[in-house]
Length: 267
View 1 (tube, one colour):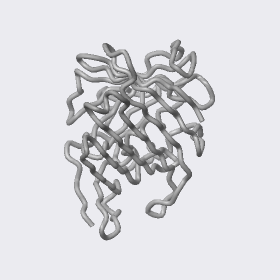
View 2 (cartoon, rainbow, N blue to C red; view 1 turned 180 degrees about the vertical axis):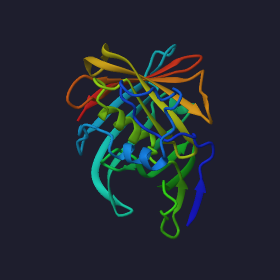
View 3 (tube, one colour; view 1 turned 60 degrees about the vertical axis):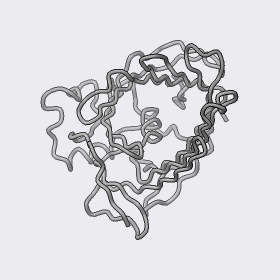
View 4 (tube, helix red, strand yellow; view 1 turned 90 degrees about the vertical axis):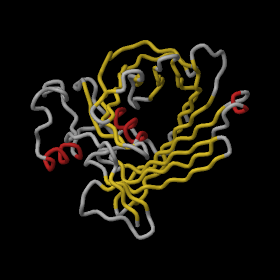
């Protein structure tokens, strides 16, 4: 067993503030005892929108280019048992499209095992194949000093309430944005731990993607690395205003271009 402590962990007890509570960056907002904060994380009110077997397909476009550069598929698998706990099996698959495969061949798979109660991460896996190089990483996430990983497994110690990127995406689907203006969580991407703040921008935004026209909730996502917000990159998430809160559009706003993940198909 190998256990690592994640570097640059954000020093705050995570919680999801309501519109009536203190803002996450206001004085006194982060002064709860860790035990109370962890209890709030695990009891945070979320809506049961996940459906086993759900498959969402996206095409990835970059401004200034006139064709799709990649496709991404998100899958909600069945609940499984990880470390003696039930967990949703969430998956993402990414593949570059021709002719861009000639420049950057990418075939990646990500697997998240997240607790049903609050979608906090129990295990995160990266199976990467990029330009002929393959990397396989399977990490058990330990948020308590009492937890240990089985012999032969790799584990990372993280803050209570930590989510991986797939768990965080589906957590944001479950937040009741009609009552909440901001959600905040530590997110572990398999290498580093970040402080992620999701801020409501609009409750009704018209969105057009290959799958159709939607009215969506627009959320801006800020990523803080070791106390400093990433200024030249931020993300926008658009969730359909329907019972499933489907992510219909995701945008990564970069200094030189914007990458758009537009929904093409729902299964």
